[in-house]
Image 1 (tube, rainbow, N blue to C red):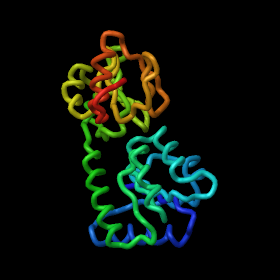
Image 2: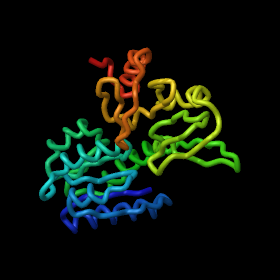
Image 3: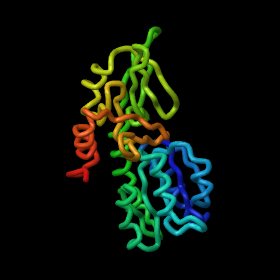
Image 4: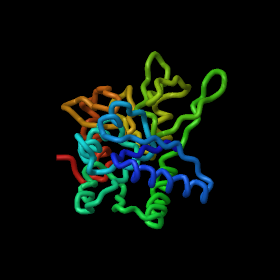
Length: 235
């Protein structure tokens, strides 16, 4: 599991890293931990992380703004704020933060919230096997942005690049619709977790792709997208 700690105070950063190592030893977990001293370096060097501990009070760009920019490119990472002032952390719902830790962080509360975060991460670590001519390839569902039919081939567009597979889009939709994959037109099946915005008839994804929402499907697609995102209505 890849974890980023964005914290300008070296002592606080080392404390969090130490807590992660302690939890890993106690619970047979392995963490790949990277420290960042400011938000700009974290975003400039960003590669997908499974979990991010973000200090709110950072030099230059604060943690809340960094979290907003993070969500523009990665809607999957589990985000936990670390702060001296809990009143700022309550705004975390705006960037889908899971929880927050108040400094000075104590190991008891840290381990409890980390356990909850790990449970959520494990729920999103579901995989599928993609059939190929010489075998199969395992893909994480959360890393698939969308599926496309092209020249009678099924292509899985993932965060690591495209993967070709067998089968049809109809078959894929039957298996993946309950996992949050929605049909926006006859050629595309989209992972709603990678949707950044809807602009007219265009669907914008985290990788910058723009996919067309067909006119006959738009009403039903928008309703399904709202339901998947936990919204009652799209206005």
